Amino acid sequence: MPTTRVDLHVKVLDETVVRRAKAAGVDVLVYAPHFTRLPDIRERAAAFSDEDLLVVPGRELFTGSYRDRKHVLAVGLNEGVPDFVTLDGALTELERQGAAVLAPHPDFLTVSLTPADVEAYRDRLDGVETYNPKHLPHHDQRARRVADAHDLPQFGSSYAHLPGSVGQVWTEFDADIDSATALVDALQSGVSRSVHHEDGTGHYRHRLAEKLHLVYENTWEKVDRLLLSGMEPTHPRHIAYDGRFDDVAVY
Image (cartoon, rainbow, N blue to C red; front, side):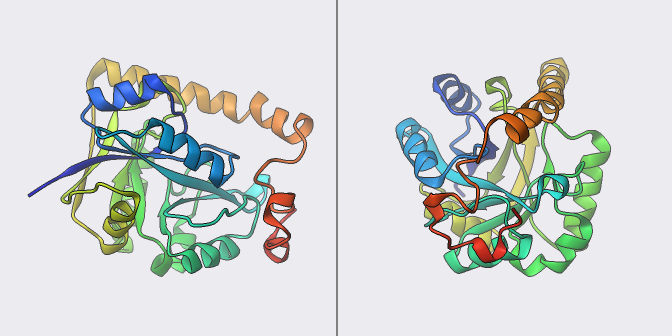
């Protein structure tokens, strides 16, 4: 039976990332950078795809406000969806587009779907992340309990904000996935899969580096975005969205 190694969530994409992914035997990367509109993600994903590595565009949506962020990972979008809309508004739009919808890092800090959210929207979710390098062991255990409680498929990702993390974690699907459509189909149909990650001191160092980056991301970088940068490209009231999301915007 053919299998496919997929890293379902990376934030960075360059030649180093591609080289590390191929060296680790990863076949598919889902590229979902923060605050970047879908056409730009698609263009970069296409530029780094080749016959040995498929890069699939994704969007990690920041639903809700900065104080109450609930991240949702979408794969297979046809049209752009902004950040800072209500969770229900985002999920309704993703359902309309037929995208696969994943719950990254559930119940993690203040940036995730809670167990109550997963229960409420269980029928709209196609998987729950149960391992990434930013997690501590109890986060992984809690995420597995959430997935098991609602009989949702599990997945792991490098959640790489740093190139060195790529290849450290992957989800292996019992399917031949050679296109974005095939990946969406595998996610939505519940194809059998298993979560894998490296071990040892090298993996520990990568996990530590990602955790330190998380501290940076939620201190100075967050202040910069809130106070200095102005309107995000993915703000729902940005001209790019032509007012289509005004009724579910939280800002």
